[in-house]
Image: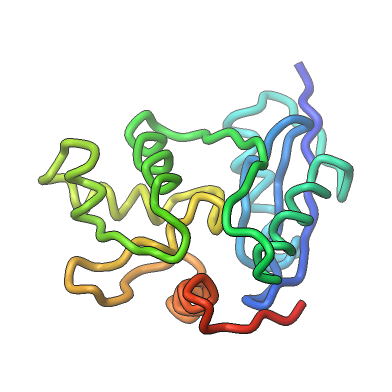
Length: 175
């Protein structure tokens, strides 16, 4: 069965991001322009949807863009966008755990490992956090090293620092 998927991009204070959505749920947010990330996202989608049809822009991504804009403008600190995680059961457990980290706060990879009752799985937690498909909305930028230092972020540490500063009210966002 063919599945309609929508690709769009938006400019943000941390650079362009590309959004992939189905008709009913956000699937992926990737750092970079659509031109840079489209091939990767189409390959990813083909793993989960047998015959995807891709359309640029489209109504399903408009709400994602609206809520992300509000976040960057400091008008939103949580999201109500329907989303769907695709990955292993372990990854989904980690990604859902990310959703419990409060706005403006941080936790460590060890904290997440403890929370899922797998205290020795810190490295596996780090791998799953790194593969989070909906950055910002599932706030992987709020995960830091046990020492309190910023470590690892798929978009780059400068983006992670910017997002954390924004949530702490230390960063004025210009759209």
